[in-house]
Amino acid sequence: MYFISKPTLLHYIMQNKILIIEDDPFSANLYKHHFDQAGYISQIAINGRIALDLLDSFHPDLIILDLILPKINGFTLLHFFKKIPVIIVSNLEHEEIAGVKLFITKESLDYQKLLTKIKELLHHHTPILISSHHTRSHS
Figure 1 (cartoon, one colour):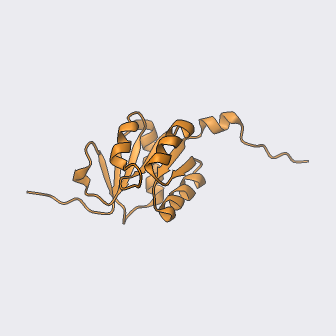
Figure 2: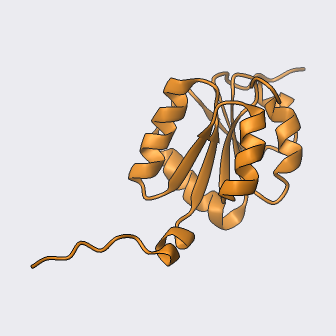
Figure 3: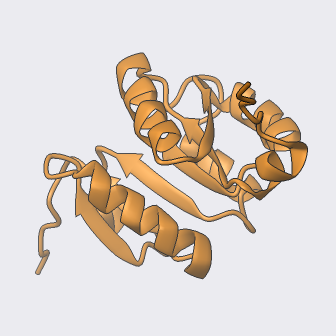
C-alpha cells in the first residue's frame, strides 16, 4: 500500500507566495503557471482593489505589479508595499519609475531568468522593473 503525503500546513507556510497584480488575463495566467511550476504559491489580482484585499489575506512574499490597472493604479499600490519586494511589469519608460535598480525588457523576458531574479529578490529585496520599452538616453 502506498501513501501519498499531502502538503502540510508547515510546508504551505514555508513556500514563498507571489501576488500577481495584472489586469491582462493571459499575462497573469502565464506568470501564475510558471510560478506554480517552480514551486511558488501564487494568486492573481485583476485590479488594485482586489490586490489590497489579497495583501491582507494572502500575505505575499513578493509582488508582480502592472502599473496601469483599473480601480487603483500601480503607482498608488506601491505605497502599500513598503516591506514587500516588487517586480514592476510595465510599458512605461524606465526613467519614470523612481528607485528601480534593475531593468529587463519585456520582449526578451525569459521565464527561467525571471525565476532566478525572483529567487535573488526574495533574498536581497532589490526592486526590478520589467518593461516593454528600452531605456533611452536623454541629453
